[in-house]
Amino acid sequence: MAIMAKKIIAIVFIILSFTSLIRTTIILWENFLPDFSTRYNSGILLLKHKDPYINLNSFTPENYPPFALLFHLPFSFLSLQQAEKIWLIISLFSFFLTLIILCRFLPLSFFKFSLFFLLSSISFPLKFTLGMGQINLILLFIVVAFIALLQKRNNIYAACMLSLAISLKLFPITYIIIPFVKKQWKLLFITCYFLGIFFLLPIFFFGQDITVYYFTKIFTSLAFGSSGGDYYNQSITGFLSRLSISSNIIFIIKTLLFGIFLIHFTKSKRNHFYMFSLTTLITLLLNNFTWQHHLILLLPVYWYLFKSYKNNVSLFLLFISYILVVINIANPGIFINSWYRGIILSHGFFGMVLLLCLLLSLAKKNSKDSYVF
Image (cartoon, rainbow, N blue to C red; front, side, top):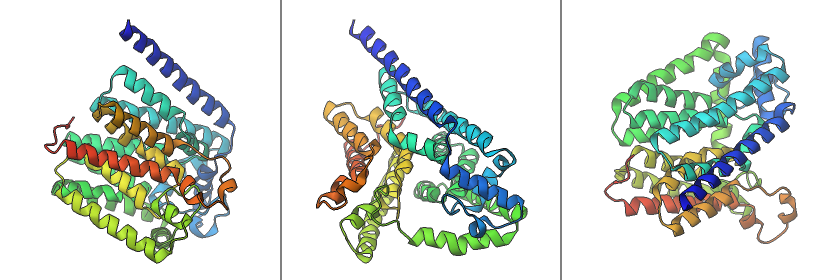
């Protein structure tokens, strides 16, 4: 009887998940997708032989790598309304593909899957990345495909996925640490080979000036700049900025934490999914800015721990971490003058810290790496 009840509840969760996704799609179907419009308008400028990094007048300045502009360029041959609809469909399809890959390599019970599907479908980071027209769900699919292929020791395809992710949005370059620590030199060589191809393609199509301008102007400002204490920045930079900590001290703290991470990482003999999860977490925590839509990239980390942990206390803490990461304060301005603003407006940061503690605790409990899937 209990088994039948769980199946019924799981089916209800699945129905609610699809209902939420369909509702979100209907709401966004005729809506303006701001970030996607920036890529779209950049493509229009490229077709007119103009540099979008300089000439763009859009919702946000163009700061994606040149290959990402080439990736988005075909959409500029359509009307903006047509392109936005296709992009929305591709993003949702990428979300489902990600779940399929995770089911294949880290299978959950039907009940656990239905619960995870529901919680992810109603999360703010998912709705935010869809509503903004961000590339995050496509990137999520690519990096999960990379780690799955790496687990299967398929070096060529894994390297292709990793180099593609880096070329679309530079922060996945931190995943290179995984094959480096594992001494997978062939994989690193193939990744560099594909990166070279993806680097040269925009030069072939647009000329070298756009690429040079990006890496000398845009990339440097992204690498060393910060959005400060803006609410939507949930990295440690955002948290410490909201506490009025100076930028120099923030830099020192982040450098020390990154050093500790590297020491742990080089001594770790964990499986690829653990190393992937740890790298994702550290990247989002220590980044200069981690917008809330970036937090959708934590889904595989939660899946991994949901799969690994069995005791109720750990699962409860995992749930608390997830709630902190996926909620949104609709009007953060009401806390701006309160003494506790640095805490309450950093819920995503604290959720990631708790998630990191759970991940490290799992590694300690499984010192013999018995949780390879």
